[in-house]
Structures are given as C-alpha cells and as structure tokens.
Image (cartoon, rainbow, N blue to C red; front, side, top):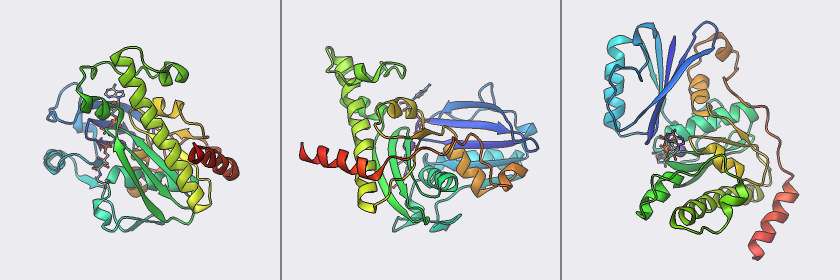
Length: 279
Ligand SMILES: Nc1ncnc2c1ncn2[C@@H]1O[C@H](COP(=O)(O)OP(=O)(O)O)[C@@H](O)[C@H]1O
Ligand SMILES: CC(C)(COP(=O)(O)O)[C@@H](O)C(=O)NCCC(=O)O
Ligand SMILES: [K+]
C-alpha cells in the first residue's frame, strides 16, 4: 500500500492507495497543528511500503513526519519544487520557494491538459498558470475563505459558507453580520479568480483549461463564469506523476483526473474583460 500525504496549512490529508490495483482504499485528514499520533485518524503503517509527501506546513512538521515514517517505511519520497520537472519549467526566480502544493498542481494540470490555470482553494487561494509548451508563468496568492473571515474578528468565524447554497443568494447583500461577511468574502474570492483567469488568458492570447482543487474548490467553482473542472486529488496526482509507483501511474494515468475541461472562447473572455474594465 502507498501512503500519500498532502500537508496543508490547515489540514493534513492522507490516502492509502493499492500498489497493485491503483485503487484508493481509504482517506482521512487531521488538523495540521496537531501532532501525528497513531490512532483512529492515522492509517495503519504496517501495510505501507512507500510514502509520498507534499508539505507546505512549518519545516518542523515535515521533519517530524518524515522521521516518524522513516522508522517504519522503507521508501519515503518528499516532493520539492524545482526549476524543471515533467516538461514544466518553474516561473519563480527561486523555484524552491514556490509552494510545493502549487508546483504539484501545476504538474498534474499540465500532464492532463498540456497547459492550464490551476487554482487551489485552501488556507490560501493560489492561482497558477502553465502555458501549453510547459512554461509556468508564476501565479497569485490571496487569503482563503476561512483566513479572510478570521482576519475580520467579527465573531463569525464558526459560521461557514454553505457550499450547497444558491450562488445568487451567496452574492446578495448581507442582512446580518454573518451574511455580510460570508457574501463579501465569497464575492472577493470568486471575482479574483474570474478576473485573474481572464486577464492572464488575454495577456497570453490563449484560453487555458481551468482546474480547481482544495477544501473550498466546490463552493468557489460555483461562482465562476467560465468553464472549469474540479480535481479534488490534483495535488496527489502531482505526487503520482513525480514519483510513479503503480503500473497505472507509470502509464501516465493519474487518479481522479476529470474529463478534459471545456475551454472558454478567447474572444468571449476578452469581451467580458473589456466590459469589466469599462465599469
Ligand atoms: N470539513 C472541513 N474541515 C475543514 N476545512 C474545510 C472543510 N470543508 C471545507 N473546508 C475549507 O477548506 C479549507 C482547507 O482546505 P485545504 O485545501 O485542506 O487547505 P490546506 O491545504 O491549506 O490545509 C479550510 O480553510 C476551510 O475553508
Ligand atoms: C501559498 C501557500 C501558503 C498555500 O498553502 P495552502 O493554502 O495549500 O495551505 C503555500 O503554497 C506556500 O506556503 N507557498 C510558499 C510561498 C509561495 O508559493 O510563493
Ligand atoms: K492552497
């Protein structure tokens, strides 16, 4: 069994993948600030033969996790952002500074679509661009929905945005503090993604497939005006592409990959943008 770990600033996600069949056997998540303790939330390491890790948490969290795992599992692969991998060249001046979750998302997205905009809606919302030839342009970082809410300190942090509510109602003017905050931050996040996507596609002269992942991907995606696809396992898919271990992975089949997303018409994107800029 392969243990894949995606350690974010909020949640540390794990999944167990069957080495032979490539099926996902189980999944879970623990709060990143809590210690890894063998218990009901943590997979049984006896069955694990290899571990792959993406971590953007404090260095100490990664070091402790690797130390714990190395004692029990032979192969521990830790992903790092590099200048080049799998045909993608990193747009950062110092590639190692690019969050590895962003790098893995970009690698997976490029593998699937050959050029993409990858959006990760977690503690932060990150928007990265890779051109069809594999050139990663860099990207944008804004606070995630939860962070935006917490920074306001209005006592509304525990009232989450209901991901099933109608988009129209989420964008309506709030009539109490909770609504005003939830609708305000939702509008901020969705408008930022819509705008950044259109601006960069316009600039580069190409409508890129748009892929979203992360804990808030579903709710953010519902507010987007352009075609897109959700890929909850996009960071894990980057780990699969970088460290292929199963037959399916070696053949380039990444788990949970969505259908090729439809792409917006560039001229339509441009006229939408022109309208926005006029207002
Ligand atoms: N069940 C949940 N538990 C915690 N956070 C959730 C849950 N569902 C959605 N979220 C949202 O997802 C975010 C965490 O998403 P995730 O992609 O795991 O973040 P990170 O990678 O930064 O740890 C939280 O900040 C919160 O807004
Ligand atoms: C931007 C991030 C905090 C996003 O992390 P997440 O929201 O997934 O926990 C992470 O990718 C990170 O720490 N990046 C390093 C800085 C950078 O990418 O420039
Ligand atoms: K993120």
